[in-house]
Image 1 (cartoon, helix red, strand yellow):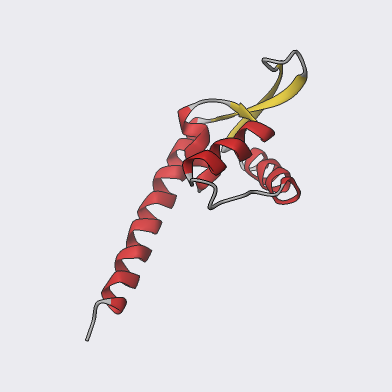
Image 2 (cartoon, helix red, strand yellow):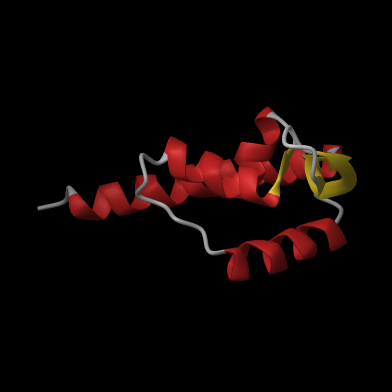
Length: 96
């Protein structure tokens, strides 16, 4: 869900995704490349993201990932699910 959310704002390469997640979470989240890339490949297989080789700002070739229409729909579903789950947890935690 978080990777889809980051990619909904702009296309990024893998390193850029990890940096953006770290920045947005104020360094609370640190994504290991060993878990990020398999996730990216699964999302690509599902058609939620697409990849294109491009040059980075530093002149290196990198695979840039962007959200597809199916990925935007999946993100909406993930957000709805997250909202339901957090509301349920809050209900339990706030009960007496």
